[in-house]
Image (spheres, helix red, strand yellow):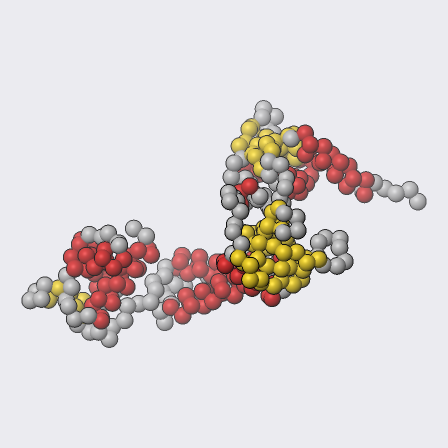
Length: 332
């Protein structure tokens, strides 16, 4: 049984005993839970919940003459939240992990949730008085700065299926251009946020980096989402958000110490690892993010070699040759 379900039942029992004078039995509470919330629970489950509440100090007694339960002291309050040391540590780590969202309105909203949780904590928490998080760090990806006035129309357009007008400055351009876009999906990836939307100008799905949107305005037009639109066809959650790249089978050979490190992590949900006789490995998976794979492989230097597909291997050869050229000593 989930913690949320137990908490919901406990809150309901508390409400019945505090605000009604009907002295409900365990069977009454189970029946009303089903009628009001559609939750199927047994009488025995309710009895166990009541016993747990008593263990936490709830002044609950059974009145034989009325065949039901009541509070003997209605000033008693159900403890707002019960945390173990592990729960508190997880909460504090999560609080630090929020830094990865600080360039979005979700940061303030999540921060508000954490603050409300803090107010629900009992006056005293039975954990060590030392700072539990002092020896834990969370390193987030660098984030781009996004104009807050851009976020609101983008989010409203997503939620209300309303078209937006954006002033978009593409890479390498000095001026922004106005584009009319039907916002379809928002993606957070490595410190950046991207909007996938139907471009009225290009008549296709395009991707827009939010920090490159200089202005955004919500229009009155209501759009219908493209039939059959599936986000999986445009992005790969394991690797990135480049669109309009062909889905291909990837094969990468890793040697040396890197060959030992790679299998320690799940880099792609579909990855398969083939171990070779010379202690090298070949990692295989299928993705529509060829450019992102090239970026990923580059971080492993000469320990990684793209084997398939041939076109990506060719791109890697040209890219690394150009990189090597930059480091070739220049004659004076």
